[in-house]
Figure (cartoon, rainbow, N blue to C red):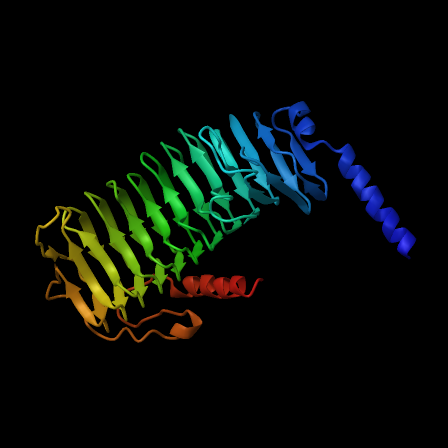
Length: 367
């Protein structure tokens, strides 16, 4: 029995040694699908043509100050089913690109992949980063660790859908200046700072679970941003949504609960449509602040929202008379079902968000 096991292991090792993944990529024609055999690969990869890498219990485990996977091709690249583990080999220096996956110029879809940080925030700065007019779509992937887990910069566009982003260092998803990104049905949890940050870009965030991040759930700043934040379940963060500068946003039908500082914190210069949100059980319901140092302001909100059960309802903010103050009486808060009978208020599909809650609980249990 031991002989057969040893023989199988030796054969698998030999087969992997014979399979040079970078050489296979270089020799492949554009449009080819490469089935990556089971095994662990330690060589960083460069993809400069339109191909599909399809994992079959394959792991890319790289220690390098360059990307584990560099994509530099505007022909469609797809990466499916791979596990990617990454950390730098030494302290990053100027000119290094220390990302698990870096889209320098290209069009890439990540599907069903797992990204694991092998080190601390300095050693594992970023899981997936796209810049300079690139397009990156991330679907049904799982991320654990990394300082800035997912990044879109300098005009990069894309989408993040049905992903689990756990334990970021500074930020789970970052949308930089000139970038436009759609976020749907994701779980972002456990950040030491912010879950989702949009700095000068465009954000479309719908039906995400943003839970247990130590600072902001949504950080919109410090450069002005545009977009929409709607139908999200935002629970147990320091601040649910924090908006800076001259940002122009629609904030609608979110449930923001149990924030240790404020449900909603907004600058006096922001131009916001705030409608149909439920802010319940936060330390402060709505907080306004001045962008000009030393200036005293009172921020006014015109939309109809529900604010209930906060220690302080408002601070430097004024709510209209149509504001509801009823107890939302969520159907089963402990089970993640934040459904209320108050018409027009809160989540449009609370059952869908409950499914994310259950998925989050399973992820906490290592499933």
